Amino acid sequence: MTTPVGGWASRREATGTPPASPGKGPGEPLGLGMPGVGSRGAARIAERERDGACAGDLVIAGVTPLSTCDWPGHLVATVFLQGCPWRCTYCHNYAILDPRAPGQVPWRTVRDLLSRRTGLLDGVVFSGGEPTRQPALADAMREVRAAGFGVGLHTGGAYPRRLATLLPLVDWVGYDVKAPRALYRAIVRAGGETTAADQAFEGLRLVLESGVDVQVRTTVDPTVLSDDDVAALTRELTALGVREHVLQTVRPDGTSDEYRAALAGVGALRAP
Ligand code: SF4
Image 1 (tube, protein in one colour):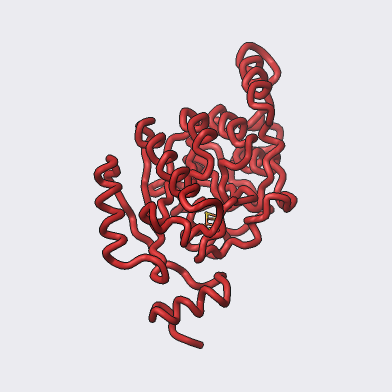
Image 2 (tube, rainbow, N blue to C red; image 1 turned 180 degrees about the vertical axis):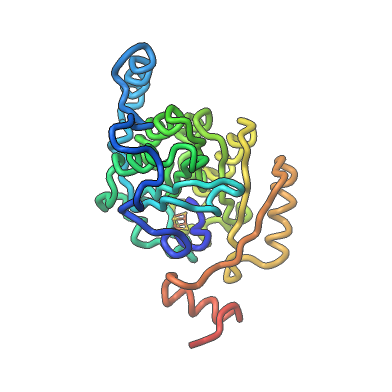
């Protein structure tokens, strides 16, 4: 993922249990029915067999039933998927990083939520963690689309091959670029010297080539990036074809004591 823009639980209507339905009444059909009837259902089954994972396999850490900021200009539900291969300096989603942690919300809860919010929500944003880590994401996206909702994706591009297969299912991407290539590992703190940078820039290339609507954003870590680094990154992204590069300020709440001390050390946080 996705930069924890504001934190996955802090600025949204937190949940595991969606609020009372303002939508369809009892007995009306769900918007996200399971396939199994007719040619459309057969096609979905074939896709699942190819992918080897279905939406019900998603490991979901939490759901925000309504967000106005996770997909600019859209009212969405946001689904936070468990697990991330990176350990960013400023991450405040520690609980969501462990890929072995069990899910907190079953996919059927998302399905039920959407069935009650047809006409009220524009779409669903899959966030994390790093949502592209999970093979079941493609099937979940297909379900969301089949129910008439748009699909948004927050990603840092850690799995470019899977991202390539997902892009045809996505309407908008919030794409995190952490740093210029040479400083990538200093922020993500995982993999080899160039592993994360190679993945992230390959993922970005795929997104740009796909033509899908994208917002590229960078959370500026002042313990790693200078103003010149940020300016160089913006120039590189512009040269790659990025039209919008959004800079975000690090939020210290929820980060480690060590990181808050580092922020204080560069004058970006008042010492306690
Ligand atoms: S470690 Fe980095 S990419 Fe992973 S969830 Fe945290 S901020 Fe996002």
